[in-house]
Image 1 (cartoon, one colour):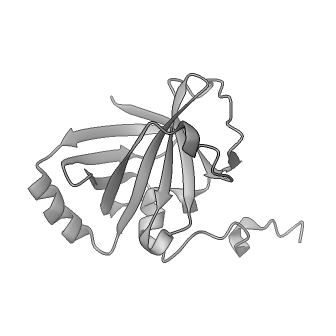
Image 2 (image 1 turned 180 degrees about the vertical axis):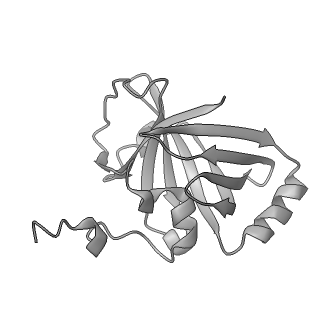
Length: 167
């Protein structure tokens, strides 16, 4: 079984830009998304495309299966996924022996910048770069399927994020 293990963070500064080694424009649409599984189509620089099936998240990991598909098919599937399509430029940033992916969103999510790092094991130690802030790995508002259904950037102080016993 394919498995994805990743941690995700809000980006708090542009310090990553000097270390970025490349980027790609990603368009991804969500054909189906529920608590058990997500079906996504993604194009990379409008040259390559993949169809991805992801299982339910357990901790910071989940089942993931990815298959390359013809770009023409992907464009049609993206049309079927509207309006649940997001666009972002993904940068690769090496840091402390790992490759971080920094996503700079555009369109209705302009201004949102997230960094994620894929791991081999959930317990793997990660040296955090100085340009990452709050971890949002467990905040569903920041997963791409949720973003595809949202009209803007999640508000970190939204009512559901405030503990009613503290307020």
